[in-house]
Length: 407
Image (tube, rainbow, N blue to C red; front, top):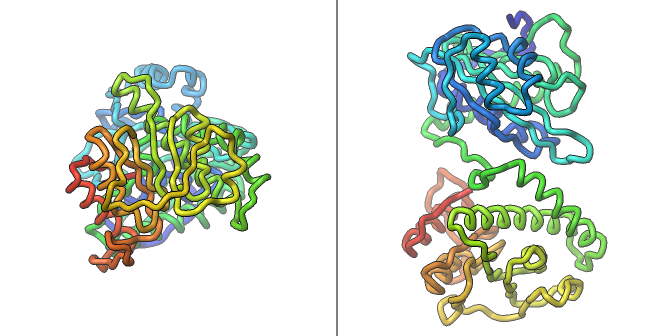
């Protein structure tokens, strides 16, 4: 089927498990090799129980006509092709997968989400995982030219410790996509596998935005908030710092919190918008966005910023000194936020735990500090200082009685 090799290289020591772990990064996070992408969502995943051949091009041709009902459409196509399938509601994670002794196929339909929705449209891509061939085939459902993924089918395969990317020689693949597959995707796969070989005890990749249920909603809301708040804030920014770096970062954090809190309300059955206190709020932009979206809250910092004067009167920002070991408690607050909170970072879980039993916290540390304000000293030389501080913060969180989720 795939008679044309775009790239190939032997990798001594590679195993099927390492191959699948590297391929899983591209399957789950294609944006790491294409900056035009924000991410990808999984629309449907099926397991084909037998090793019946699946022609990716034929399957895609049939699926184009059924995109309005993805799950039912895929099931109907499988029935038409006499494929015995089962739905996998939790999707497919290839970390730890070797394919050994497995009979069958996996069909995974992904939606690629572009960063700029004004320029690009989301695209659907079908991936077929064939364990006995140690091959994963990708095919875009849309035929028109795009800058997000090749429009022709291609396969990533491992055969006898040799990694390759292959496609069909006819029709002739376009040169731009062929170069991207050889120079970008293939090189990145080689790098990932090499890193995994050197760290064979490394745990599975952590998925960015893993706590957010709907990536498409995140992408949509981020674009909405970026237009609603970001553009004007960049225009009027009075500080000496780069406005785009700080503004769009805070828009992304606000988007994350708004969706996380929405999920929390849905799970608890509550309609009340969560309250918050942002400790070390800095420019106050996060407080401004969350307040403007209806969440009652306050930002506290050691010094006032010029940008504070640009916010409307309903945004509460206070200049105060926080003594974390004293009476810095917020008993009526739902969430404590520590966004680049520096010396306060290790104290954030403690303050939340002491404030109220129902109080939760969000911590995004930047510089790592100890409780006494000195710089955090790494204990584990096999990880970065930041990674070791995250471990330390998680230990503090556990001592404070929290069930901690990391993203």
